[in-house]
Image (cartoon, rainbow, N blue to C red; front, side, top):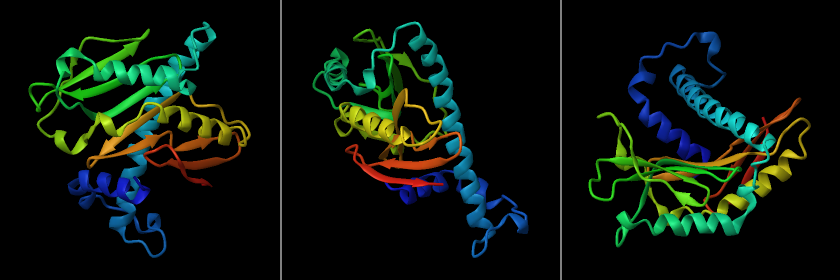
Length: 226
């Protein structure tokens, strides 16, 4: 999904709040309305929250790497495919379509975290964790009446786990070109408006920051300095 589509989804979600936002004239870029500036600020805040969440997980798994538990899972197509096949074979989903809700995270030490639509009640969502080659039992996800569940669903069939290896490889190659940047320890999908987008979306070096974007098939769509 392109940045414009992703931004529109976030804008639609936060539309009521954005309309009430007061933007000082000095904060409005040339040729931009106060409303447009407010929308951009909302988008930046959401992306920062996502980045903070990922960095928290990254810190945890960096410790695991120091303990010798890093198995380079993100680059292992075979292991990634095994996890996908095992998820599709969960008995509660036998003969049923599986839908990912909101996100699925892959970590280099071999774990995966995903939320799936409940196999019986479409209004419910369960969390699953893949660890040591096995999927956990479902854990109920607490949702709000304000959560638009259906708009944040994509079929599992649209997310090929092996794509993670292509994304991690490309990201790490680009990061190696940026002074102070580090290889990624996680890759994840975010779902908005029934469309998926791969992350990470940025490479932070000691002197420069780059935006990076991938297509649904893992191909590089954009890499440019910010």
